[in-house]
Length: 467
Image 1 (cartoon, rainbow, N blue to C red):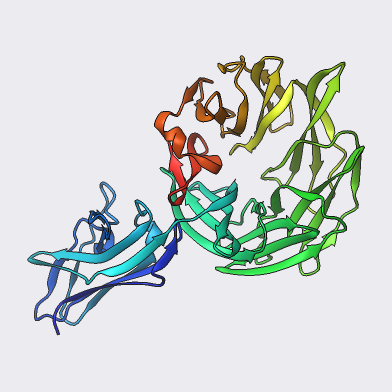
Image 2 (cartoon, rainbow, N blue to C red):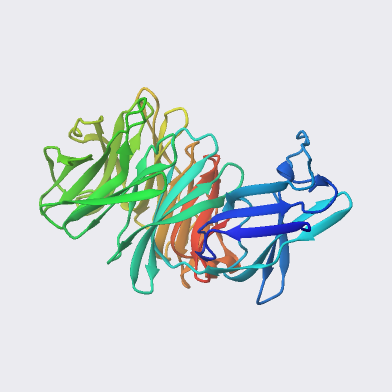
């Protein structure tokens, strides 16, 4: 028996950003030890070569040692095997969709070997809707993303884990459920300290559908609603684990009527239960989102369109509640002068709440910020008008606030409908050639809760990062 290298994959046909289990082996069937195997790689693991079958281009990927790390170089005695199992996406990201040949390469003191080629096909994804949520208390800055893919015969819901500790990268993407129509799925927040469990929910017709994704296995169910005009106030809320007790998730539903709106909580457990409805008179909110503080308090913010003597303004209010306790009647906070275009709210690591809204005031576009400190003291800031041509329409706006309360924005508009970026200084710049590559759905996520990265849909493959 001679020296042999192998590489195997659990699946060899993947959707873009999907991962699969990989196994590499180096088998020493020779008559002498193999000394100092792949000395620059962590645990002497294989270097993976990736060859694009169409272009012939080859790139190499390895899990290299971090600087100043203690070297633990392995040698392999006769008859021994060096084996490594890992998720493919933890080692590298594919540069594009297409067909690739993968090989495992090993080098040692006086020789080297490469496995036979393993053929892999990476298929383009076609995202239709997207929801992102940062894992609470995460030390590595994980973001979970639920998105709907348009398949050849319908739609499917996918769950993706994104690592944003140092630079954004897809860790894995898994298919959760096949569905018949286009929906927007929402995730539970805070996600559990064990990332193997996650709630997803969406509304289709008069059904509230939900999935418990635990240990890699989705369990789907649904609850019938009394009407088909409910919407979910994001996100889903799930208490942290208490010992071995797995907490149910709570969903806050909104229903709009002609002269009032109502909210109620659905608790998802073995037998889902509904709270009493809270009815609020007046115009229904245009925007709504819940913040979940570390002490378990929930703050649901709503922005409601109003008008006084023909002058539009937006009323900011919040509703307070706790687990298994229905929301209170919304408390008025402030009137934002102008018509609402986009908004966001974010919880910092020290439990401060930052919010921002983009509004149009006559001919100017203005961002208005609010902040609640840990004692719920409210602070309001109105930024100078944006440097945006007053004659230009804004076709689409994605506004996100980072962990320091700084707003960033992705704007589509102007005479040619291009994409623009607003940075932390408030300056708006055209994204030049990259503008033509951005498709919706898209979002903004933050590396280390601070530095913005655009998560967008590229028509050639699917979800990608920029910035």
